[in-house]
Length: 273
Image (cartoon, rainbow, N blue to C red):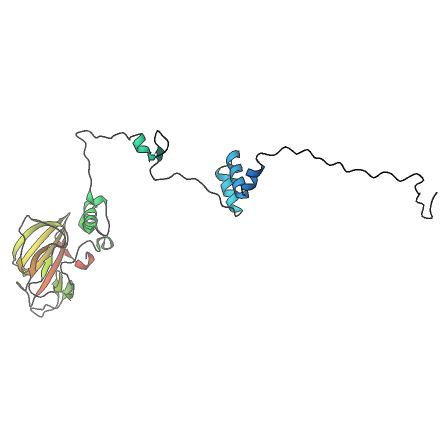
């Protein structure tokens, strides 16, 4: 029979409803499922990169995506090993001693001080400059600061160069050094390490004078001294007291006349201090 919409009615009895089969057997347990759940996604990606041999390229690619990987780099600290029992860490050097290195009897080992130049070693800087070239070839920029101050307080009284003579009053007097204010009896110090080559009276107006040779044509002189405490041939160190200031020779008052000579010619001391 058909209804008005053309759908056939069932002529027979109603079909029996299907029974849903209940599976009671337990599925095999995945032994690694819990371990995968405990590992986060970052850990899984890292292990995948290590297992597949991706290496550094994978690390760069993953870092670009915002992930951070733990990269193992060689350590500079001593390598640690374990003892025979595997309990106590010991230094690898104790397990495998390093071989001893010896030199021949005639070998020359040079620990040159001038090879190490720091701000705390101004003599090293000066020695390096003088050993590399003559003092006359050193530029002002390179020589600046290579000599130390001969006085604890440096106050200029008369600069290097042409001036009006304080003794004659005439113009065109060439001042061969730099005058610094110093009361008579003020300590005068060596500007750098060197050898004393002259101690005595300077007949051309310097009065009591000390000259120190620093090598390769560089010398410093200290003039108008009241007394000196060094002798010719003596080696002095930078900052060592060598004399006391005074007003001997062609002087109008207590002060220190300080000169710097390069290959026998005077130069402006401020280019070296």
